[in-house]
Amino acid sequence: MKLIAIGASSSSSSINQRFASHAAHQVGGAEVTEFSLRDLALPVYSEDEEKENGIPADARRFLDALRDHDGIVVSLAEHNGSYTAAFKNLYDWASRAEQSVWQGKPMLLLSSSPGARGGAAVMEAAKATFPRMGARLEASFSLPQFHENFSESGINDPALSSRFLEAVTSFADSL
Image (cartoon, rainbow, N blue to C red):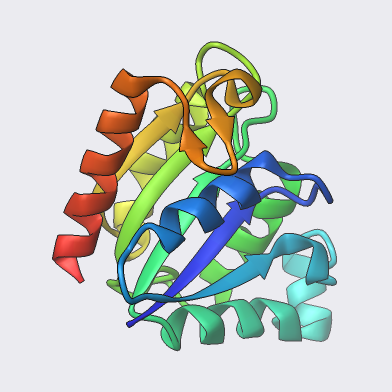
């Protein structure tokens, strides 16, 4: 079973990439591929850009990567209550190439932030839009105060850890 772990941020020290990777590795027997937005070269989406140059190769590479995996783990960073600019741009380009961006694949949807809300606003936005774009949302979880609640061995807070493991188990059972 192949899982793709996406941290929806372009930061070189993305807590959401770390969180997505950690979650994907909790699924027993899974082969995990980390997909970094930092590796993409995408112009800012515009209709004029698309007409002039078509869909960028990196948007197609993203869709191909999704196609090549059995499940998706995505952890959303939140900028001003919404998706990061890098993720939104990728999402816009990918949706122009393929309306069902997430291709009906099972998804574990995560978010985290250094703050107390754990990316709650971006999580709600994704829950509202991802299913319309082909996501099969199997489970979701927001981790607040990432730096206080997460270490390389996992989530430190017992209640949060329990809820996280329930989400991972629900996702794993759907694969």
